[in-house]
Length: 450
Figure 1 (tube, rainbow, N blue to C red):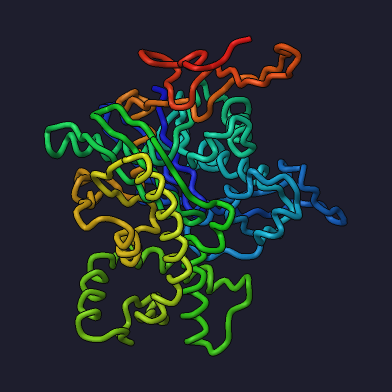
Figure 2: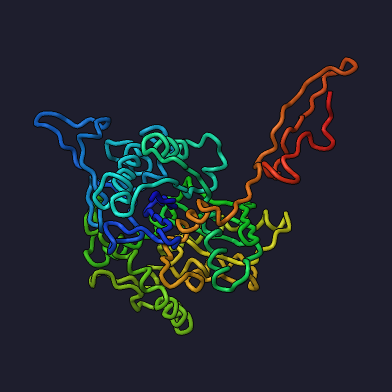
């Protein structure tokens, strides 16, 4: 049996979902059945060089790789390689903290080989062969026909990994597909309306307006800022909080490659998810009794504590970023007279209780929040929401509606009565669908033909 796989390739974690032999959605765990659903997007490597020889980055067969099972990894670990895939030059990588010999493309290749094929705990070893892969990517990657990151993934999976059927869909569309599916299962009626999908990951905060009518899903607008994500998004927040908590205990900030700091960041991510509901209640209580309490909100590894003031101070840059992105999207929605029927939060970073209040400051009080946790089946993994949706799209259970994002045509110049005339001749109108009634529209009304 060959499987259809949904892949949510994230900056800090990767999630994989598939349909089992009984057509049930399953989340792949690594390493082994008791492993994690959120698999760190981290790769450690070790050169197996001969005496007197220095390893050359191109000689990948002479290296050993493994995906760390926890946060305790050192200087040879490669992180955040997804956001560096579109960048070409090494000096561009260096500005994002990339200091290893390998290129982001080489690390991505080795990472997915470990995760899908070569490792004892890989998908093909644990589950079976792969027939179809749907990769969820930022909408901005899909809008650009020659986007370098997408091209690299297409080459890796199609040519090097031999995937027979490869598709790309936006992360927002995948999330909306699974939310609509769960809503149908839970309420026995189709979800109809416009969803504001807010996705806070390790490397970016992305928002999208998705028009949903049952299985028909269309991304009508989106926004985000991947250029500065690593400095303000989920990974930056975790790093800032880890630095604050570490310094409070040890009196000095940690070194850049401190193993304890890496361990704390992973441990904090676990606690952040586990204590979500409890923290919501505690924050609400603190707001009623005092402005900023020094009562610990999180206790990590029985050593590090995080109080309300530390939490809010570390979150402030991210809150500003969230508000700015939402304001741009909502301004366009107002001009285009688009209403929002539901708000949905996805991405592991959205588990932080301060995220939803920051989003709601920009919205009408009447817009309901679709609580993902209340919609999911009992055995579902919230972290795999986007990956589940990708599988549904692979099964054609969700029908994406794609539209041309740009008007395509030519500029024509000709002489008329001794005067040079210029006119734009559109072939395809922006906003029309590639097939079906109403699109594409050729030679728009009013175009002047020479």
